[in-house]
Image (cartoon, rainbow, N blue to C red; front, side, top):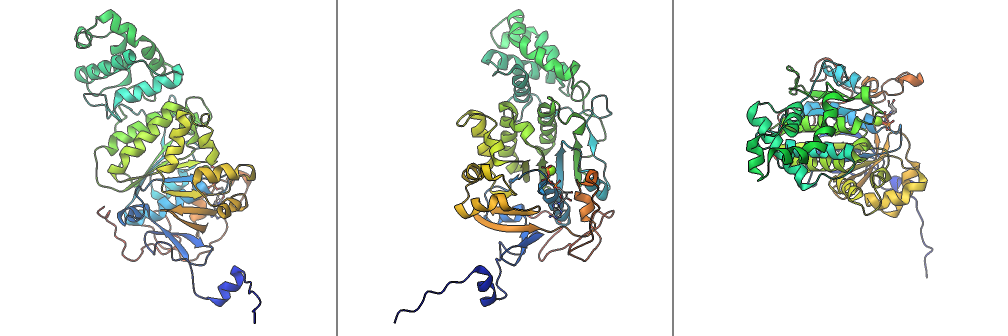
Amino acid sequence: MKLPRHVATTAQLAAAHPFWGEPGYGRTGSYMGQDLFGAPFWFDPFQLYAAGVVTSPNMAVVGQIGRGKSAMVKSLLWRQAVLGRQGWVLDPKGEYGALAAAWGVRPIRIAPGGQVRLNPLDAAGGSGAGPGGGADLLCSLAEVTMRRSVTPRERAAVVAAVTMAAREQPPTTVPAVVDQLMRPTQFSASALSTDVRALAEDGRDVALELRRLVNGDLAGLFDGPTTPGLDLDAPLVVLDLSPLYGSKGLGVLMTCALAWMGARLMTGDGVKRYVVVDEAWALLSELTTARWLQASWKLSRAWGVSNVVVVHRATDLAAVGPRGSQVAGLAEGLLLDSETKVIFAQPASEARRAASLLDLGSSEESLLPRLGRGLALWKVGGRSFLVRHRLGGEERALVDTDAAMGQVPRATETGGVAAHPRGTGFWPLRPVTAGASSRPEAR
Ligand SMILES: Nc1ncnc2c1ncn2[C@@H]1O[C@H](COP(=O)(O)OP(=O)(O)OP(=O)(O)O)[C@@H](O)[C@H]1O
Ligand SMILES: [Mg+2]
């Protein structure tokens, strides 16, 4: 006799299989929220990297406005502090102040006419060439404003100028390089088998563009030695770039800030660190700054860094250039290099393209337009998790960006408030996990 087919929904299956839940990758790292298949969701890119689950600890966070991207990043930084992780944040909207205050640190505010100057050439050393070197950085910045690639002659002139500036008066600074480009030495000219006049001509366009960092709208920010006393060893370093938010100079500003941070990373202090680039579209909108971001991603894996890039839409990444173009390829490459993708809601009209960019299946694609605030699809090391990010207690005040909308942070929904290791703050959830250590673990 043929039995009637049985049909059950996941709700009924949950009753048939009580106490089952998606175990994720186990209880390591920080509690981030509730997997919608029932179990708590824990996350730690460094431990997942050490366990071979992911081959890079980088993360891409994608989602429509106001869905909770920055809130998730802030609480990840806050919760990971108990494991000794540090955070460096490029903050274009100036919204990490409350988090910094809870940590007992002040954001470094980068403003024209302000008190802080960063030298993006801190890492330039003697050669100024090679990935992360001063010559590469300056060529990239010149390309942004010239809206064309530098020629081989121009690049050679910049390398010579950086080398000479480093030799004559360390530390190398942008004005010193501009000066060398305008008035090259006989030594530089001979090294390139040319004469001083021809070399000055080769470097003149680049020099004029770079003068913007010295005399133009970004004057005073990157045109000298780094202001003494900036503490990059603080548990949280926030570069508040908000005075230039919305300006054309934001991409250049972010690139210089990233270069300055990169200089410090190269010293390799063994600390596991997050480098967060919030509102990363400003960097991705230009080929050269996108290239710079990608280069720093590739290098920083060796430095124990988890790069976190935050953008609104997956298609923003592809929209930085025509499909198949170099810049679109770079942006898509960043996604491929991010083995952890945290995907908040995407507009229905873009779900198909987003799914293809983010390598999602059809049921995941259908979820994208329906994800509410705080709910995200986490793709980690090839597996998918649907996670509701849980904020606890006063942690809400640290992530609130709705203050201007008149919302009052609500009471705790997760209970248990304990002391945060940074002393001045508060901790919403159990702070120390099984097997957790305050020392950065070996990789
Ligand atoms: N998991 C959550 N539970 C409750 N409230 C949340 C959650 N995540 C974010 N919020 C609230 O939603 C508001 C918007 O969050 P957030 O600033 O993180 O959004 P966003 O996606 O970064 O937005 P934007 O694209 O504008 O930067 C904040 O005030 C925050 O407090
Ligand atoms: Mg945000």
